[in-house]
Amino acid sequence: MQRLKDRIRDIPDFPKPGIVFKDITPLVKDPATLRLAVHQLLHPFLGRDITLVAGMEARGFIFGSLVAWELGVGFIPLRKPSKLPYDVHSVSYDLEYGSATLEAHIDAFGNGDRVLLIDDLLATGGTAKASCELIEKLGATVEACAFVVELEFLDGREQLKNHPVHSLLQY
Image (cartoon, rainbow, N blue to C red; front, side, top):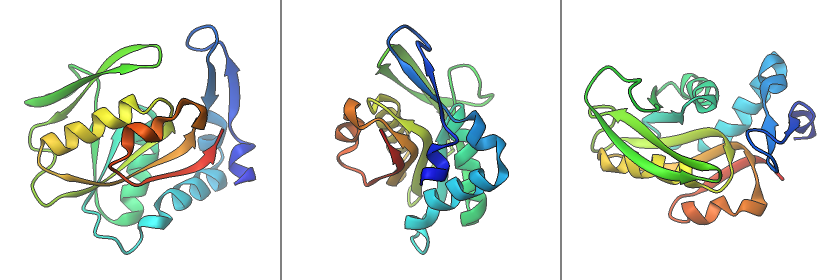
């Protein structure tokens, strides 16, 4: 995991003073490291009956779509408001530095779907919890949540206590 950690840079005071942003750009730029991250994200879920992968805008799209490809299942984007062209359901939630809303098409998930939720970062857990709520609101089951980075000091796992959580790097 040190190889992954070496490819994540800290950006102090972004998006506001006091926050240290974990920038994954160097990780996704390097094909070998990106492949390693994707394989480590999906490894615990091989052989499980995952039918879809979902990822949150925007960095969750990177890892989520690659994990879906490797698992041989579809990918569902969870988007910011007014980005999807069809009828949507939405969930609003609080962030560590504001509030936000996520949307999915009303037919994105169905009864019987078993979803793996993927994102680059677990911080306070607000985005992931809202994503789980949105997926479940549309009739699917969240099998697990997986993240490249987990900021343990923000206790985001507590928001996801009803779901298994897998993270590659903990800070």
